[in-house]
Image (cartoon, rainbow, N blue to C red; front, side, top):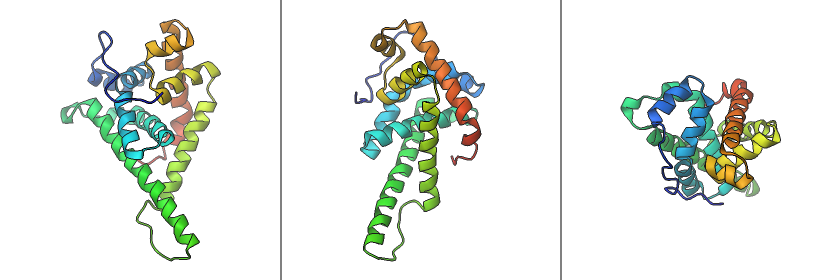
Length: 200
């Protein structure tokens, strides 16, 4: 399923995003899940437009929400809306990934042609950091119980809302929400120690 920015309209009363950010900063995984539900289509859309690659856009989208979880306490509501902040993160992360991808391709071409030219793309340390981050997230996902991994992948990679996930899996809505909350909490725990060294 391809995500289309702007199709995830409001479904009933939704918590204020600024309040969600405050709850996320206090360690509430349900708030992160709700923020994702409200905004992920827009975030994924930005990533996909910049990268033009679904797999890269999915990884960067997950990276954006991982960063939002870690840095929620730094968010200043006086400087803008949470959605604008998320979109800024998405654009920045996507551009970093694009530069890294282009830099790697240029360096491979230079080696093949035996040219000693400097690449204008990301340096090897940045490229390695991006690859390690993606690998860390994939490993953390594989470590989740199957039912939690399934709902997280449907949410992050297919952009389904809680209701759509429940319908897809023929589960009660409460069950789907509970598994998403537990999955996000386990991901945060798995990524916590390794995320400390990630650049922002």
